[in-house]
Image (tube, rainbow, N blue to C red; front, side, top):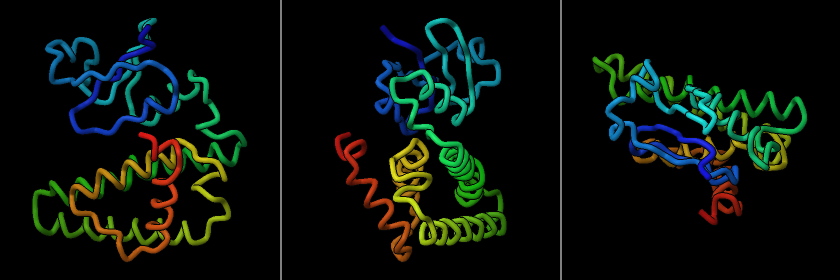
Length: 185
């Protein structure tokens, strides 16, 4: 039985395989009354079998994980949970906003400012990875933040984001790529 439906735009990445929940993915473009279901028209959006509705990527991730057989993907200890959330929010807000500015800025000046921000975020992230005291971002175990960041960088590669010269990001992404949760999918 389907636990819920996630409405999304085509081309966005999915990670419902980490939860062991059966989640149906629906392209919002195939739902003529989508705004009747979710008046703001935002994606992603979650509709559970009991009618609960939720928008915003991170809240959906955490809600789904907490309802799964693997709630530890959100972190176990308070520090893990907080750091995991920090990285989810940083990449889903600051980094994506700067990336959008680069890709779709209305002027060349705006695009250049976005590129500057993206580069500063890459530098910051590389330095944070250099100085971390855990195997992954928040823990010695892989968490949803790690998977999100991995998928994020893979999707941004399609837009020409280059991190080749960033040793710590490269080795971090390589370790994630080899993790059974990612390698098997």
